[in-house]
Amino acid sequence: MTSGTGNLRALDVGCGSGNLTRHLIDLGIATLSADISEKFLNLIERNFSRTGLSETIKINGRDLANINDCTFDLAATYSVLHHVQDYLHLVREMCRVLKRGGVLYLDHEANETFFNPSAEYIEFLKSATPKSVLLRRFLAMLFSAEFYFNFVMKRIKPRYAGEGDIHVWPDDHIEWDKIEQLLLAENFEIILKKDYLLYKGSYLKDVYETYKHKCSDMRILLARKR
Image (tube, rainbow, N blue to C red):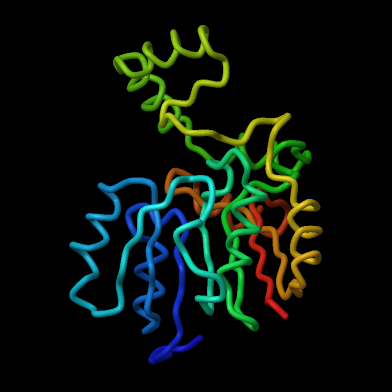
């Protein structure tokens, strides 16, 4: 996909504040941004409606029932699947709304190393964040009312998450083999599967550069509908 792609249509599932939507619109792709949050959708409208390439739709967090079959050339989601209880069903729904030849884009979801860390990954985590940053985080945490609220809530409900949504847990996480089986069953061809090491602004850049080819914690997967 290149700039000025004209008639291409994309669906951004779980668009949030529009990080992915922004890139798609910059490429000249008409984009439907979908989210459960009306506040995020209003933000998308304020930021992108003037482009003439942006539309929004509210979804229920479970499926894409209000979107027609075979509508989009690209269905994309970035760091969303681990917020969805039945993420396999959501992936199946993304497959449904794609045209023949359309591309499914899944990115920024934890891979197996995240849950079963290698020696290199553990070493990276210990080295990447400066102690001064860790100290500032610790002090900020101690003086945060939210920290104590979350502390109490986690004692009541161990899987409580401050954001109020569902997150990846060690015994309940994204099973990439099941996603690939689903895609094959839906007649998709996997065209890219790549693991990478997530970069955070708090990391020491030279440490990240040293380890980014040694270990990973995230995955990107692209598949085309036959």
